[in-house]
Length: 176
Image (cartoon, rainbow, N blue to C red; front, side, top):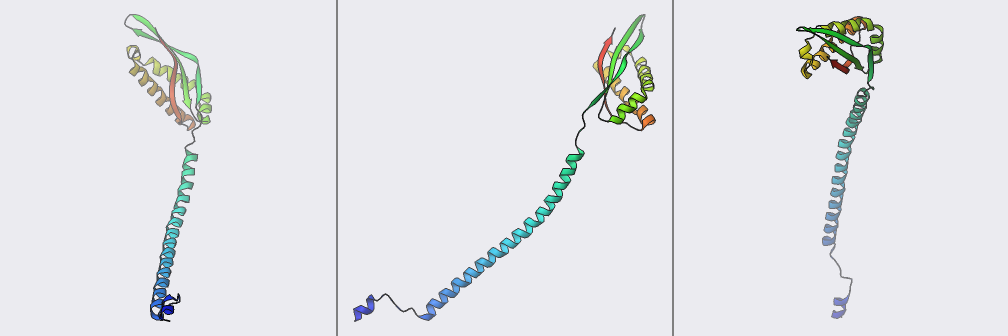
């Protein structure tokens, strides 16, 4: 019989030992679930707050993109060519220039067409006031382009309240 007691698989576990282990296991599981729930709540709170800000940032980015759309360039050719004569020492010199205006605004195109005589007069006046030898240098032509642009902006601003002239372009510049 003693052998039977040893061989039996049903060994009695005292209730005090098994109950304490089960209670510890239940407490650990409850604490783990609680920690996971708190972590999920914090993550949801932080991510939900970031989504609101990113939605606002996305809307602002869309507005910026809409504002940055660049219109295609429009070129206004001033016809006929400009021909100006210079007295350099004892010789007669000539400048022949074809000028185009670059803009991205239809209002500027309309204003240039409307005020073409005044604009041409200003250009001829400025070309006539230039030093012929200075125009031979690239710096002289750049300065002339800048001066013509500033005068054109001033004229258009005074007459039509537009000033969106991007550049003055010399498409032909011949000096003799």
